[in-house]
Length: 205
Image (cartoon, rainbow, N blue to C red; front, side, top):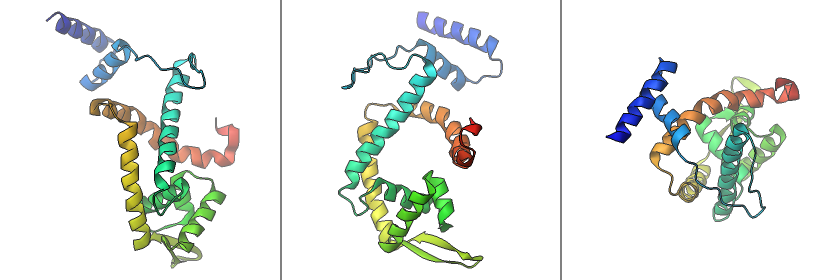
């Protein structure tokens, strides 16, 4: 009962300063301020202290988790017909986009344009992707996944599922939901904004 009284007290304080907040907002705030962080093991590189400020720590956790996933995925793809993470990324992007122009696929995959063009041409040559003239603009081409490409992609998706199981082992579904709730608005805003800002360079910062 004592713990319940403490929780109600925290809710009262939180509601006073956040009158429009919902229960799930309170829960996230409470966990953020009252959950003790697990000790971080020292990496092989000796980076024990880590970045000093919260923003840097947050971005390091996000970035290095993503890099770990890509590293696992590169290894997993060696046993598939796709082989390359970049090939998988563009093929998956095309599947999401449906029949599309090369520029749209590369943009969605957040890849350098010149690199994306080379890889898409390879996928066409390997018959993972079919290319046809855009009837609405004879100067452009439309791409779609072939049955061979779909089969290869499904094989890669199974490897990707294995990577997720390894990477997220021990992470509770509630924690995953909380992270998705935080990161979804960020990635939805900046996935397009960051790609479109390449031409502006550092001026966009």
